[in-house]
Structure formats: C-alpha cells, structure tokens
Length: 175
Image 1 (cartoon, one colour):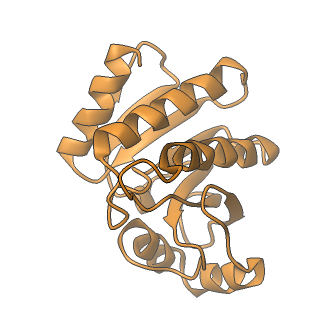
Image 2 (spheres, one colour):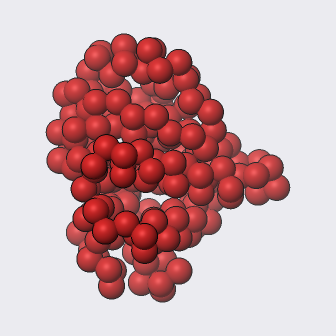
C-alpha cells in the first residue's frame, strides 16, 4: 500500500471484496442486480442477501448512490453507485462521474463510515479513460476530505498494478 502526502488517501492493488473496511463502493449498473467486473464480484462474495436487498431498493440512476449491508463481505456496507458510460466526454460524463464520488461519500458520512474503498468507477465495460477517471476520483475525494474530519481512510482499490500506478501518480502530483 502506498500513501500520498495525506495519509488518509491510499492506493492498493487488491480484490476489493477481500478488504475489511467500513464500506466498499460497487461500480454498479442502474438495476443494482449484479453484472460483470467489480459488480459481479461484489454480488458473488456478498451472497444472495445482497441481491435481495438491492431488489428492494429498486435501482439507481447514473451518478447517484445507494447503500446496503455488506452481508458476507468483510466490509460492513456496500455503497452502490452507477458511473456513466463513456461517449467521448461531451455527454455530461465528467459531472456524472464526479457525482458518483460525491454521493458515495455523502452516504458514507451519513452512516458514520471511517474507512472506504473505491474501485475505478466506469473504467471497465463503461470505457471511461482511466487517467481522466482517476483525476476526477482524486479531486472529489480530496475536496470531500477538506471538509470532513470523520473519514479516516480512503483507498483507491485497483485490480491491476498499472491502474494503481495511475492513481498513485495523480496523488503524488497533488492533482
């Protein structure tokens, strides 16, 4: 695990479903009923109770966030957020992605979350460019932390070394 100048923000190359944090963020689809990538892995690791809980929520619009228990995950909560599909950047994608982070962090605050792990939202099948997505993620998290003293740890949890290096570089640049 590497840290930037602020010890509250770190990068980690790991399977997000294995981390013992207060909350992990799920890069979900609008149905919240599971899918591929991070979404499928979280649903699989959390067990069928997560699907039942998500059915009761009734979906989530792009840029918004919802919270459920973590069920069989080591994390207490799963915060589900729906990132935008990349269409070239001129279809409100940057604002919608930023909203994913803001809304997830607001839910974390409401539920007294002290540690949270974010995957790289929208960069898989939704094709958001990784560096642009990481810049938005880092900017939104840093802005939130300027006004919040309760959240102790934010981890950018990357599935690959290359992805972790992107986040680490942006954190070190102070962007």
